[in-house]
Image 1 (cartoon, rainbow, N blue to C red):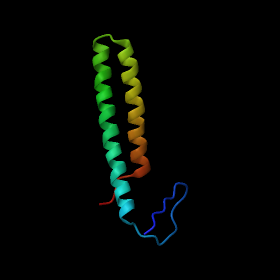
Image 2 (cartoon, one colour; image 1 turned 60 degrees about the horizontal axis):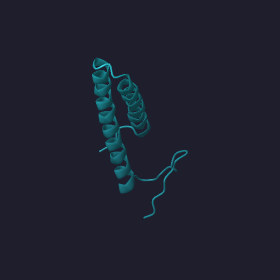
Image 3 (cartoon, rainbow, N blue to C red; image 1 turned 120 degrees about the horizontal axis):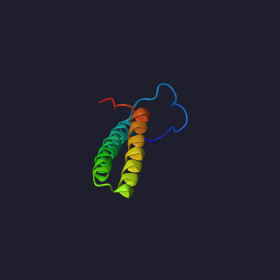
Length: 84
């Protein structure tokens, strides 16, 4: 069938969840996991750069940690946990 996406607002009532909606939910959870792992690695890199007194590394590591951590949290809040 036809795939309709509702970016602003909710779909009309009575619509069933089809395969594309399920795949989209699983895909967004994969994005959350990847963003979370990148944020963790950036956090470890920031700590390592602090120990080595590498201030440019601290700047980029902290920036990456904040951006990817924010993306991970907001994607999880927006998508929620997919119903399996």
